[in-house]
Amino acid sequence: MYGAILGDMIGAPYEFDRSPKIKDFPLFGKESEFTDDTVMSIAVTEALLDALDDAADDGTERRLVIAMRQWGRKYPYAGYGGGFYRWLCAKDPQPYGSYGNGSAMRVSSAGWLYETLEKTEHMAELTARVTHNHPEGIKGAVVTAGIIFLARSGASKKEIRRYAEGKGYDLSRTCDEIRPTYRHVESCQGTVPEAITAFLEETDFEDVIRTAVSLGGDCDTLTCIAGAMAEAFFGVPTELKVECEKRIPEDMREVLYRFNKHRCPQKSAQ
Image (cartoon, rainbow, N blue to C red; front, top):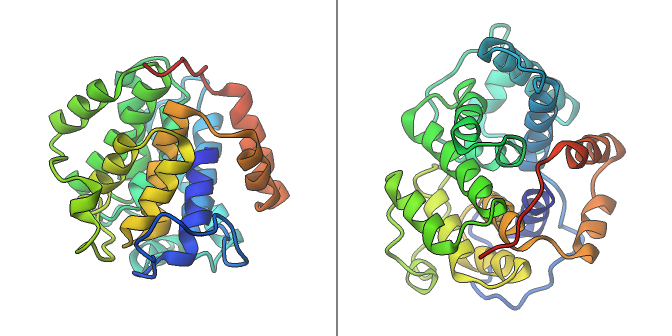
């Protein structure tokens, strides 16, 4: 969760193709603020925590819808996409076939709350399909959560790469090959592979964040996804956790602290 929120805030000033396309930039500035990525990550986390007592799928989905709409209405100007904003305001909210990267950016807590990969993937699918029920939207959430589960469980990067490629993502391009022509795109299929590549190439949490931002595009979401993976593999430096907590309001910190009490332990990366 820290990794996702930090990635969102650090990437936010460079969204919409404003990235300098370099890794040497200030991590924080006056524009380093949370966006819809953080709001919905918090909402999904709260819903999944409330559903931990073996709630049925339909009960979990109801909790997800309620939490996402409550948090979205509480923070209505966080930068939601048009389709999602209409869903937030609808009298009878229904999935709308989206394959946008919103399903992947909000799913990070699912990678930490369950004891098996199968359960993690299933719960990730639930978090996606209440809105993003297109196969690519579901895949983005499932693979993101699956990588987080594998990374915090001690899997090697080679194993993680094999998992993502087995799910259908092409990871053949390096970040140096992606960077020159990469532009703002809001689909899972145009964001998740790039986030995975940024994570796989680097050697510590901050390097992953800087590399993700350097790619450009939809920087807050790309870096949110990459940061969530990086946290599970490398951990997050204490000073960055402190900075993260300073930059979110009390209601979000409460959910974050509650999540920290329930998340599964992190094993050493191989």
